[in-house]
Image 1: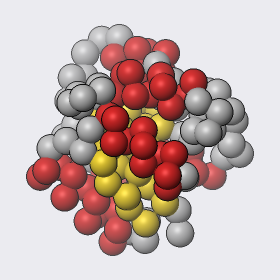
Image 2: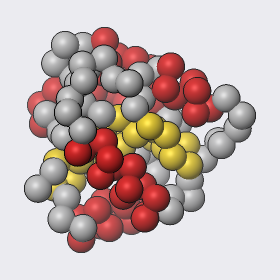
Image 3: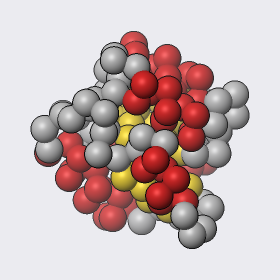
Image 4: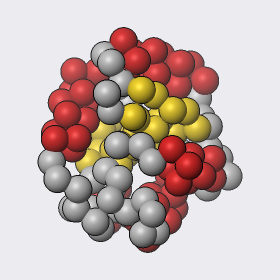
Length: 128
């Protein structure tokens, strides 16, 4: 069973997505801001991180950069989540170190496909 770290500050989104992922068999660990997300990534060593980009304390962009800069966490794949699906956001997320990008509102089948792909490939330190 893969361990997923879900970093999401919106309680409704966090609750809905964590329950849906748990029903699919994932072990879900939660964080509510970027700082907690980084700390939990180090403590829990998840198989994948689903990272909201609009977070308090440390935003998702900076959290992704810090996670990929650390030897402890750089090999963990990250999927960026954002409601701001503007031109260039996908490229910016990938440049920050995220391995993939998805938009809100979340389409669970699409997100699950992206998660399955990243979980099935060999770990590559430094991301894509």
